Image 1 (cartoon, one colour):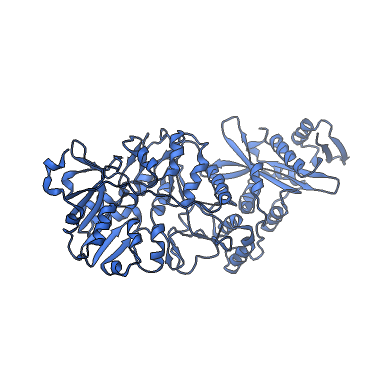
Image 2: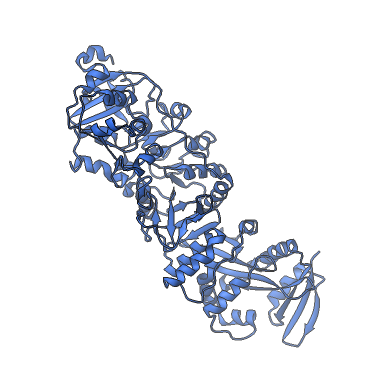
Length: 620
């Protein structure tokens, strides 16, 4: 549509349009990479404007002015999220931060709790029907426009036309300023330690299954994690912001959105921030739907996606599971943003859950990010009741439904090894755990990833096997008390009725994963995994033989689990220079004896007292 003929009075220079703004106005500016740079710079250069309040979700262009006294004397910045470029100004008190859930910011405008007079936005040129596109920034822009008396749009031919709910008719805009310029590009900070990012990505990928729909929060680390999802299939996306990190998954058809039950075949987001390559990809691409934040970030809408997995980051996590993601002590660092919306939405999603991913340390390893308590002044963005999985480069902690005692052990286990004992001592001081609680191993246990295996049952279910960890004490206890008396007798050779916590701790602490190893088999039961089998070996003497023992839950016996675990233990034992196993078995336990004979036809009976036998089995 030709605006020169349709509405010539609405077309003017930036200077003329900005001159329509009154002193004391409250101005909304479009978000992030979609902000109208030319209008912003023209507004700042207009010396007649004074006592102006600026509301913006994510601000970039104004960062070049915040150190100028003349600017701060005329403009007050109120931001819903603190960008990397604005962080220094936030620390120095030069801007004002408004804590708000992203889904609820539009409501602040519509309810007039935050009044607006002017909206400065950027759009693509109109199509033949008079519709412009908000392009890469839909998010809260529509709400800002709808609640402003005056709407000034920079029309930029370099703004991509995005689909979804980004269309704005020219009748909704008061003044047009035609000015072409490159759309702001955003390059995330390169994560300083690629090894840490790789390890975190490895653990996060274990939690994400094929056909899941994912959300990735704003930040460097969450975007790094996307690199490690390239082997997944048919992923969907429902997220706040699309960045260049998504492009490989889109281009390689890892993301297809075919298995989404809500808006199938569509990537759902609110804004794009990245390179020109990303903007060219989303331009007129029907796969990409950009919708307002009040829809995308509504927990009830998020929950409409089955298998929704939220991935976000944090500055620190305390031992009870409280999350700080917006401030470093009293200094505001980022914002609440979309984290709480998606954590709560994923919790309501069928088979959905959330992941908080963060490195275990800060300041080049001098500080632990797993802390005994949040730093003084730190903001608790996410409560301990909302958190599900926490991931560092040292593993995965599962907190949902866990007691404080269990949470302490889970989180201490994924803290940096040099801080684990200190965290346990703090927890004892606060009476979070028992006074005699033993700390997790201080080893880096990444090598245990090689010992994770899977056993497929005939009915299609899968049992995952991995080494016993310190956080498994409670589940180990539950497994013992789930066993029948006869099963316990065959394992311990007497009618053992009680397994005290102190004894479970001793079992766990004695596992050094080399001379002594315990594998547990876990099967999903609802949203949790229960132990159904345990296999272990322990160094017996200096003859390089290890004593081996098994116990399998009654519902999983005679399915081949013992044979499977025996083979896994043998592989691990060989790595640690053992030459064979020994086992003490009740003579009546024919099933276990047959398993040993099947694997070691040349086994030797070195003891037989009529009730039990001691067998020696040399590896090939």
